[in-house]
Length: 125
Image (cartoon, rainbow, N blue to C red):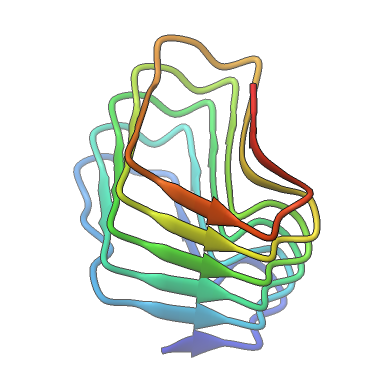
């Protein structure tokens, strides 16, 4: 469990990692954040009640974000910024203050079979 961090619960600047089964709640800058990180698999995590995005990818490629739960985050549930060729699949995103899943300046991503309910927008491209 990662909680009450003054930054992200998990922050990765590296490649080929698999955060699995993490409970990241009530963190200042978000639950799980990948920056310039490639070929990671973020799976089966609960990222909820964070002050920013539940899961955020920035300038990251070829990652898999699958089977995660992102509830009641103060920004988005899952956010990709300047990130491409990622897979976002089978995630549940509920009651984010902004978008459930948001892509900013990102291209060639696959978004499949996610469930987004009670967010400002379910999916923002």
